[in-house]
Length: 246
Image (cartoon, rainbow, N blue to C red; front, side, top):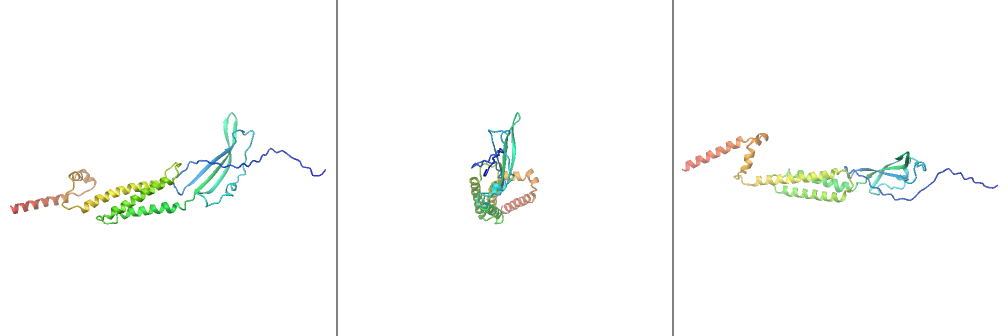
């Protein structure tokens, strides 16, 4: 009879459609640019229920990493998982779903030089202001340069970080708090520079003396008795000089 073939229908259908699926993930950018994100994709049939088709997986993750080259893209895949699930709509009806989970890690080699090094430089310049003499006007120059660098870094981060994040990155909080601290330091430097370079005979403002000699002096533990005694002795000396000249 020659070669005889017997076709047996088992109900299996193989379908390998080409697809380019784009999904949006809720990103946790707390540790940007060294963050790790996990995105999930649900694939299923909305026209055929669980009584008509059955979706199964081979529980293999190598399928997703086979043609992917690590290190040549913005993200590196560090793990995947596949599982089947059911979407119940009530009345005993449900739809089969295949849930694909992909864990990605940002390729942050470049950000290590553009983010971390400026942060260290800003910290050093901020501390450098306290090492310079009080009467040195270069403290203002260093403080202004540090504030300018911090402002430019905040602008750079605002244009680089994606807007879909659910949490503010720690690096943004760092530069924001550093900028606020630098403004306060500049104010303190200006005040101390004025006090250090002003004439010794210039008396402090009357309102400031009223505040310092009041209850605040007890809280700040200011010993104003010596200064008051010195002022009284100076007044007595002035009176004696006037009497002698008279």
